Length: 390
Image 1 (cartoon, rainbow, N blue to C red):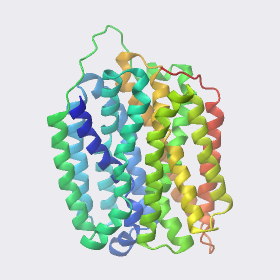
Image 2 (image 1 turned 30 degrees about the vertical axis):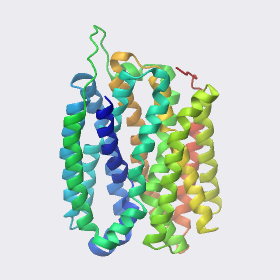
Image 3 (image 1 turned 90 degrees about the vertical axis):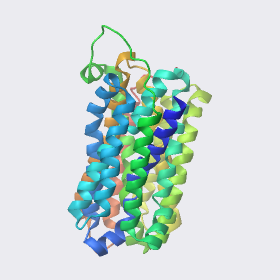
């Protein structure tokens, strides 16, 4: 199991990279293939929505055929294939197609790891191991910032993407060779995603999952680059450094929140506190979007830490899942988390266009306002969640 989790960690590094590297590419894609911020919002949104929709068949596949075949087949075809299409792209449409393929390839990776952890390790260790998995995978978040900018400057963006396609293929083959499926659960009990949706106590958790990751994913993976460039005149290197800081903050959060739930003996209030911090940071960005580059960088980092409550929220939901529906359960949670991010990738494009004026910060004020309000609404819903710690 450890070798399989190692291979899945490598794949998850790439998954994190692929959801976060577009802001660094924004200037060069605009120049070479005419990709606007709206085009990139659409492409990034497609990644998240395809990823989210895939959680339904991925969950069924995890429970029926296991993580080895599920993760390896999709990552080879979608991850490596999508990166290849991206490297050969001649228009924004090609970038969108590539991101859709990459979304398919990345869709089973984290949930395959969570399935193995949930089935193999103690329930009390889930939050720490799940958070550690995301924290380790967030190396990809780092690689999608300053290192990606350096690679573009040194090699060019097309050779960089072709190298990533080759690396993705090798990792996909490693998944096939190293993952070992947990033993199947033999039970006469039936069930589906509908069974889980009929459990009332899960809905406050679903709602907070829907809004929690969307601000961090959208800002880190899409809007941070245009925002810092338009409002502060940041170049590719500066954007890379700022998003690198945000990525570091997200790693710290992922490693911290799991142990905090055991330290304080609560999942609900650890999550509530973390998301509240992000909501306050978003509110300051809403009110003071052009105060200073470094203030905005710090606030973006706080939003990133807030989004790192993701694994603890999944652990909260997992504590209510029947064992024979564990695969469907963790992927359903992921559907809400990634689906919310995908919806907001699409929604922020029209919000940006509708609020665009001669004042560079106005369009981003509207985006920050929407994120602040939706996060606050999610926190209100989460107040009705039942706390449970394994």
